Length: 168
Image (cartoon, rainbow, N blue to C red; front, side, top):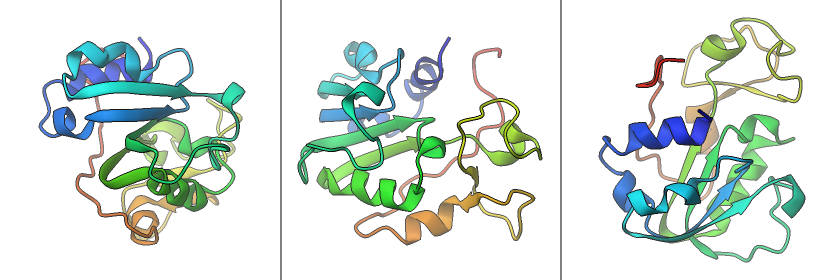
């Protein structure tokens, strides 16, 4: 089971996602596991456009207009972009005022486990932590500081998952 599918099963039992995935959205870095395949589980979702490498740079979203979507979803893509802050600024920009941006990133301690460059994915350009005083990673991004630096962004929920409901 892929990351979006695992996360969606969790989200169906978690408050918020029914209203966050409402209207028309974009799934940045969708790969072969797009959020749109779960549309029938989110009754307020009208559509969810998949966006992957063939569509263009996930950081800049060429051709996508300002406030084009009601929501943005991105699972395990932000660690692959050159500049996570620039990407997040752009993702908020393409989201309508009052919309939601839902981003999943791997925790550096749980995924990379103190090893850089990544031994699990050679394309990772950054590691992420929720918040800690220091990091072993030379490319660590503190999620709280990242969100604070993004115009129009307001953190609604932040969660560090140490396990999933699916055995993996």
